Structures are given as C-alpha cells and as structure tokens.
Length: 550
Image 1 (cartoon, rainbow, N blue to C red):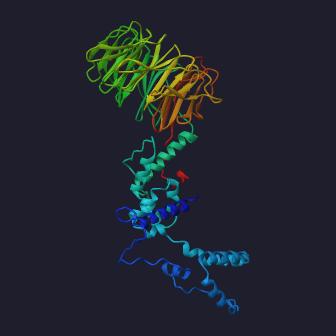
Image 2: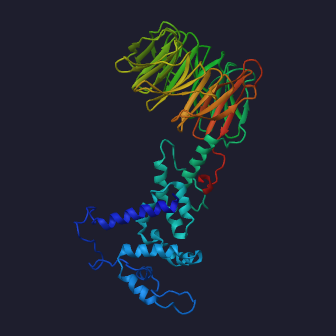
C-alpha cells in the first residue's frame, strides 16, 4: 500500500472510533447517535448532490452539452429512484458494462474530485499530528511534499523526536549546533544524520580510509580511541597520540623502557602497562607522564580502568589496584599461582583470569578472594563481567558463564575449536572471537548459541579482535580483513577493510569503533604490509538532505 492509503485507512478507523464512542472513550448505547454542536445529529449526505453541497460546491454542476436529453430519461430516473439500494447497484453495474471508455472516463472526472478531500487539514492540529505519528519516516517525507500545511505538520519537531525514540538501539543524541538555515526541525536533522551513518556502516559509503603511519615496522599491541583522539601502543616502547580528524601524529609518549602491552583511556587520560614492569599515567593532550607506577616485578599484561581506579594484572601472579589521580597503589591481590592474563573491574568487584586455569573474584577493599572459579582445563585468556555474570574464555576451547555472587558455573558454552581470544558482553548477549576463524553470538542467560558467523565469507584465519555496536558485529583477523555482520540475523554484510597483503602476511591486530568511526591497527610480521592505523569515517556528509531516507 502507498503512503496516502495508509493515512486514509488510519483516518477512517480513527473517525469511526470517534463516531462510535463518547468523549470518555466508552461506546454509545445501542441505537443512539452521537450529536455535536446544537444537539442535532448532522445529516449524512445521501445523494451525490448532497455530497457536493457538503463539500462546499453548488448542487448544480456543469452538464455535458450534447443536445436535448433523450426521450424517456425522466421516466427512467423516476424508476431508478423507486428501486432499493441493491437494485440501484445492479442497474449501475449493467449500465457501466454497456458504456464506452470515453463515457466511463467522464463519470470518473465527475465523481473522483468529490472524494478527494484533504482530511488532514480538516482535523485539529493535535489530532493531525497524532495521525502522522503512525507513518514511517519515509512516508513523512512524502507527506511534506503534498502541500504547504502538510509540510508544516510533517516538519514538527516533537513528531521527529518520537521517531528518534522509536529507533531501537541507535544512539540518537541531539547536537547543540544546527545549521541556521535549516528548514526543518533539529530532531529531523538528528534522525536523517543517524540514518545516513547507519547506511554508511552497512553499505560502505565512506570513501578511502585515512592512513596513519608510525611505529616503523613494529607491532601495535594495544589501541584506544576517545573523542577525536586515538592512542596506539607498540612493542617499540612508545605510545602515539593521533588526531582522528586530520590523521596527524600529535605526540609520542616516550618513557617506558620495554614494549607496551596494554593500555586504557578515559578522556585525555591514558594508562599504559609494559614489559618494564611499570604502569604509566599520561596526559594525552600535553604528552606529559603524570605518574610512573612501580610495584609489579614482571610484565604488566592486562589492566582495566573504572573511574579513578585502574586494576593491573602481571606475570608476577599479582593484581594491583591503583589510584590514577595520585599514582598510589591502594591494594595488592595475591592468590594466582601463574601469570594473570586478563582482568575486569566494575568499581565493586575485581575478576581475574590466569595461566593457572583459574578465574578469581575479589573484593578489592579487603583484598579477599571471594570465589575461585574452577572448571577450565587450560589457560584463561579472556574475560567479560557485567556485574551479574562472569564469562571466561580459555585455551581449552570452552567458554564458561559464572554467577558472580555464588561462584557457580551457570553454563559451559561449547562449539569453538580453539582459543577464545576476545569477547564482548552487553545486555546478556555475548560475542566471542576464536582462533578457529569463527565468531559466535550467545545468550548468556540460556547458554544458547544464537549465531555462528561463518559461511563462504567467513574469516580465513584466527580472529584477533571484535566489537559490537549499533546492532552490528565487527571482527578483525590474521587474514587481513575486518568484517561486518548483522548481530540480529548473523548475516555477513561486507568486508569493511581488506588489506592488499591479505592472505600473504597482512594482519589486522586491533580495532576500535565509535558510532561514527572505525580505527584499525594493521601491519604484518613478514614485511608485506607497513605498520599503520586505518581510520574510516561514517559521518562524512554533514548536510541534512531528505533524500538520505529515500
């Protein structure tokens, strides 16, 4: 059905309800009619002449000038009026079947205009806007082209705000600055912009990625992205701060005496961990090293930042809780008997996984291990924690879901064939990337595997990193590609990045994405691909154009 048909159907149902119900919304008693105005029921047009009068036209219309009327016409009309409604319909059917095409066309020219009423303009503005809320955004754009009054209604700011709210999972935020010459509502501007960004993500209208070259031929080991700043850490002992807008390297953070293995970022504050056994706190705006955190006796392998605290895990088997603002070590958590490989911290509980096959839940304030989660039969490499569930991925090919309060294993997720190197958990949906070249989507409440992201377009080598947002899953791989998948259906959408050296040594090591940008750290271990960052912008066109929705 077309847009106008949708409006007419809804208007008919609305008016029928209005006629059949009283002001309080309850149906009228059987046999009674709703009266308005002076208390008398308004007469319903019974003939075509009555309809013309109701529409504001004269009951006398211009007649066909084809000579005198045929004999017997008045007698035929009188006979027609004596027939019942069904009999008249039957007579008209027979009459139309005997008419020539030109005669049927004449009837249409006479009849159709009387039924083409601007019903939206006849309604109070509030009711007209209510009708329009049932239209899809594309239909609203069509409505705006009908006439000046419909355009005013279809540009209503509150109407478009509701359309923004109806979108599920898309982060609609009204921007402070709106073009002063914009002829439509700010919320419509927001909707069209977000729709364009979503289309660019899915369809690939981004232009060529911006290349940021640095770190020579070293490996980029960690990647952070906040606002318009990108921070890359490398085994060349440095971190580099880049502009996501211009692609320029703004500054190099030098101070570590060993390779940088992990990092975290919040605003302009960057924390890095190194093989030199220290953590460093940096101001990304100035490049200053604010604090050097000493205490670990071996490589700092992992960390997690929450508020003003960062928790670090080391090959020395301990975890340390640091105050970022002062640089002071507040707590030391001991209990693992091998290297700590991964850590999560939500401000209340610390969860750690190690090479001793164990997952531990800690109260950092008392430095007490609340639970030791046993079940894995090989090293634990990845963790996710949402305050309710702990999810651990291991070299034993399994993923385990634990209850953080009881320490019990809720589900064992099987299906992967190798090491689960990365996971992301949000709203009870878990996405896992594995060295078996597949990505899987799980429901942690039921333990069910919802999708396995594979098929003819699957990765050809180990998955190195993943992220999901906007209902999409992004996965990078040793095969030199970044693939985009639909989270709801599990379908492959496209390859967002495909290195020229893919399949011959090119690797995408890390990815980070915001709503509008994707940053990839790429290179190779055999010299076939330069070490670089690729930045893709999905919000290239800042003009507001109705055609973006068509």
